[in-house]
Length: 580
Image (tube, rainbow, N blue to C red; front, top):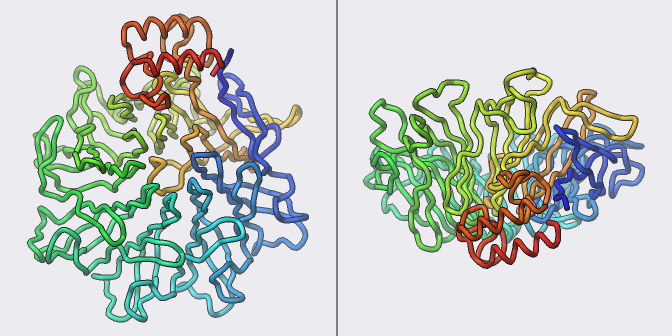
């Protein structure tokens, strides 16, 4: 009974991406390069861009088409792809909320939430009335029900007459169809000191969450000077960082940065510079913050930069979680935390957090034997346990001996404890044609290679192509409203461009079979085969309350909870019998 980790075809029938061993391929997505374009008779799909997904393998994909009457002005299409592919938007068309003659000219990376709503930003064209000051728009909705959320040049909701949208960043969306985005406004009485605004709401009702030059929740007399990029939980809870104007409301350079959290009409100060925080190594107070992350429990995570700095004047960083239910501030990792004899955590990057407080982050290392070839690592906290899962300079799994991890380009984590990361490869036989790899990680299965540049992709028995590049949406906790490439169902979606210039989009199921807990010889990591080694290892681990037997939580579901009990025993027996 072998577990499966198939690469499912999205872009080209018969696509097989070959790594150290060939992966099984299933064709299950009704959208393919070279085939008819769904919803557009006589059109053919020519290429597909980087896809995004939700937790149920419903994907949002932008592609180009060709055929009769199709030109550069109308050849880009956005589809929502589940069991069928549905047309959402197309360049050259006038969408709801736009004047006649104003059409869409490009579509940026879309986000799809768990109820199937798609949110995206696009550029507009259409005669002399469309200018650089009014040619950007945000749209939200589903096939046949798309709505305009905001357009540059339009009146900004909840602002004085004549105050217009001037620009906006990419929107974030919750599962309640609320969106949040950071924008700027222009118009009467608007200056550089009061033109930044965080907006949130729906297409029919946008609200002002915060604006520079105006009052600050939780700090009487203070005013915002700068606003950070907001995130949104599935339930619609918003979090963002902000900088305060000095010398107003008791604000100084020591306490002028904070984190706010809440709903548009009830934002509250969560954390602020100069406050004490529970530390793991050197004690300090907050000096500044990284951007925030948020999850389904409305917990927020951030990296705080502390004062004082370390004795060698190096930055002292602390990754913490503020729990939504209790308000407890929980430290996860800190600079100078020991990893191995002589090796410590250095500076910690922005965390990516999902449900169950699964947190992934990239950090530098310092100490004995640390140099530019091995000074970065990828970490994961799962079930309260912090692990270094990959390090620059280490051998890359499923690659030839001497091929090592280089710099990490991004990381994403889901609520079931799966991680995917993109990195540069270095070492023996590595050159510009094969120096990128996309990997997945599971606590028991370890690191697996998903795809690498230079690998072979078989489109048919007579058509093999070489992977030239990999494009994947990274840096999300999968519950913060950002676009994501990895769902809680464990399906990872990505795009490849071949060396001949053609493209393909594929989906890889990175889930580990529950009963596959060890490899040959009865030792972790798992090997993709469910056999007697797994059942012997489970019984031994269960009897010793070893973490290898911790495969589910108290509800009998993933991720594991750090407790070995009857739930794990039942889950293993059921999974072993089912061969999964």
